[in-house]
Image (cartoon, rainbow, N blue to C red; front, side):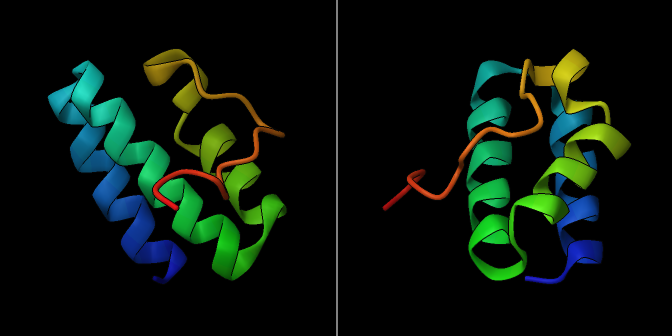
Length: 67
């Protein structure tokens, strides 16, 4: 998955804003982390303010999500 596609999908999940959407975002971040690494994940968390939206913090390991 590209970072641009991840941004698009995460933005959709933010607009929905429920607990289920938090899980969807975690799945997306897990895929990004496996492909692009932790710096890409941290960048998305900061850029899209996922800490405020879903309580997701930079430095969190998402590689175990959905594995």
